[in-house]
Image (tube, rainbow, N blue to C red; front, side, top):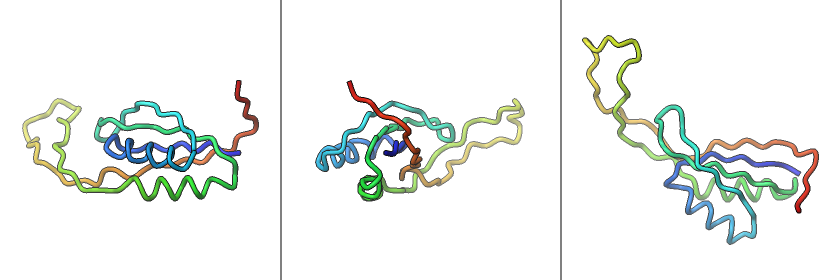
Amino acid sequence: MKMVVAVVQDKDAPRLSNALVQEGIRATKLASTGGFLRAGNTTFLIGVEDEKVEDVMRIIRSNCRVRDQLVTPVSPMDGTTDSYIPYPVEVQVGGAAVFIIPVDRFEHF
């Protein structure tokens, strides 16, 4: 058994959640916040048998897309704002960060 931990952008979360339900895969959703953009994410905890891991990965890949977004960087931490001009920067957001962790034991009550 494996625990698939998928951190996805909030925009992708409803689509991924619906796709998992359609395939009969149970997941627990947790609200989380990204450190880079300080934007909302959703973390999915998905416990599956080893042979279903690739099915879960396929569902995640097809429902979580990378896209470009303009963001304004946060102000500098050192307090020197003399030369700081906050120009919007285009960055890639979305997609999914996925961790696959072996599970030694699982019990459901």
